[in-house]
Image (tube, rainbow, N blue to C red; front, side, top):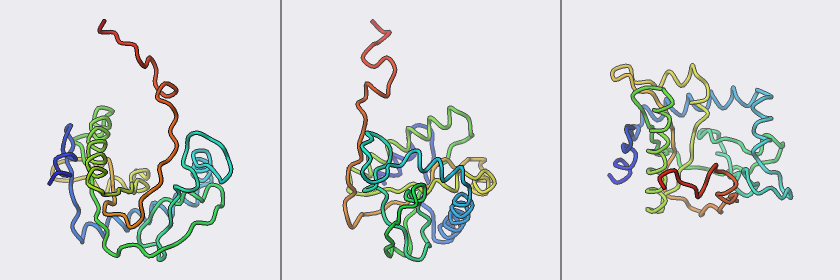
Length: 192
């Protein structure tokens, strides 16, 4: 209930998917992941924002945060090691993951901001409650597949797909750059 309130804040709508829809979303996500893995531009992009072992970058996704892949590929997690050819461990994941979809009324830049604000609230609430969330965004990066998630009755557009649940092993913190390096005009206000 608390997650639903966080997910519906800021003009977004949240849906916890039922088993039939879950199977469809996972199938579409696997299709998207398979298509993307064959694209050299996608692999180059992954390499650009992931950090191979031993490299002293202060941002990006470090090797210790790549995470394992599902042993039978039923859960289509992004393979962060793909860009560097790094081997990724495989483990058995839960057979019936809980998936959440965030929708907005349209697909404008304002809707993207609304979805981002709702996602922020949802992720912070989940963290406070000891939950972990994994984006399954591949599906949203293939326009034809993303269109299949649109609600034909309400016209709502899917903005986020999340797998959510209680982790068996806590995730390690990833490096962050100081806020002054990633914002413009930090500390200055126009309000006087």
